[in-house]
Image 1 (tube, helix red, strand yellow):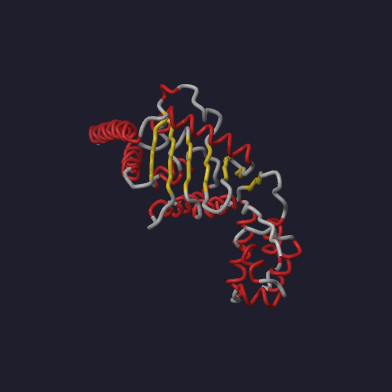
Image 2 (cartoon, one colour; image 1 turned 45 degrees about the vertical axis):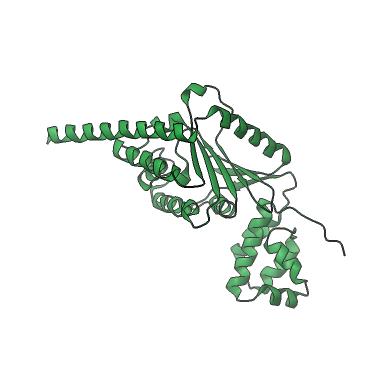
Length: 296
């Protein structure tokens, strides 16, 4: 019998993860659940790995057997909707579902490219810098701030784990000069960039202000590549994250990355710029401290 080959999409991968978690929590093996449902174990395996479409009826059968009801049932069934156009929008909440989706796909990626124009990327932020970025605009309720900060810190285990993905960051020089935190916190953030940029497989490249109208001028983005699935591009807004998988979108963002590779400083040149900016913040912080002593 010929089995149709399907690509694992963002939505199918997340649905598969949810169904696997439900099954594990219920305490039944994949093979045993498939047997009780009268399915081939390979079918359930491919659904859980996001490599086979799962209809709402099929998902409901799995969830009903595992005693999932109410809001949780509805949330998972919504993941069964089609994504044939290669686009998926995730709404933001308290600890956003889009963050869960992003973490899932970052975790299994082989290579991640990230472009940021006005801030240091979340995977590279210190805790003080992250808190300032989240708090500063005044858009996140106070009760949610620490949860967002800690989620961002926990997400960073990705680049510190034993076998991390290769990560390439393009950061515009203006983001390094934007004082979103005090001089001490900005100095520590520059040192963190220098430290992480020295790790194997972690490239930090600065887009200099002299580059002018560079290829990524319109918006920051993230492109994630996998060994056994098509690439995914994610774009973030204040309320939503957009995941793109169509061949046209992927080709567009790969073209942008190619242009940025030509426009950005080399890894070594970028380290030199980071060291210089760190020194500026260090001197400014020392001056602020002297001024406070003088007022004491």
